[in-house]
Image (cartoon, rainbow, N blue to C red; front, side):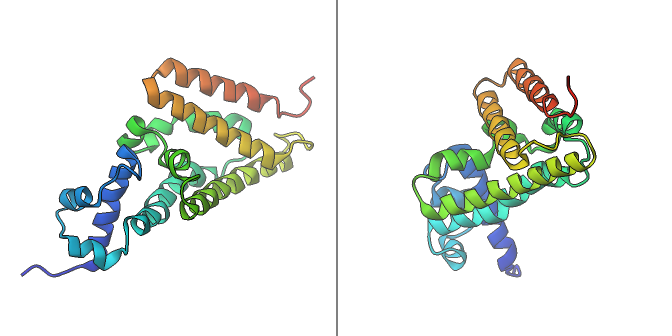
Amino acid sequence: MATRNPQKTRERLLQTAFQEIHAHGFQGMRVDEVLRQSGLPKGAFYHHFGSKTELGYAVVEEQIRPLVHSVWIEPLTDMEDPVRNLPRLLDTLSDRIPPIMREHGCPLNNLAQEMASQDKGFQQRIAQLFDHWIDALQAVFEKGKQSGHIRDDVDSRAVARFVIAVIEGCIGVFKVDHSQEQWAACRSQIATYLNTLRPDRA
């Protein structure tokens, strides 16, 4: 008889639920389909989660949060010059994301569009993740000021908010037609904007 492993069972449920939410949205995700795809009985679901919503919250915390950290936050750790290095980060994006993101876009932004106005629990968790990303990017711009790559008068937090909004918008548009021309245009205009943050441009 196979040994039961509750942690692996929970992880399988979360991974399958994440894939379903990413492809169909939280409201389109069906628990019975998650169980069918994961090969688990209904009792396994209710052992770990009290409801579909509780499962959705866990997907945000345990699947989407680590993904956002690895794709967007961890690469910022040693970045000294955001004007030069952020566009390069965008150039390597397709190599650093799972294939499902190329097809369905950013899972964080997808959920923000779908659920932030529908459920306070989702709204709070999504807002915390965006704040975490904003904090990390703000720190990069502050470091850029200290190293002389960014003007001292730049509002680092406002710029971080704006850049993230533009990136997410670019990903959303790319999701529609998968146009490399569209992505190249977004990348080049982000680079142009970042260059305006350099000191002594006159």
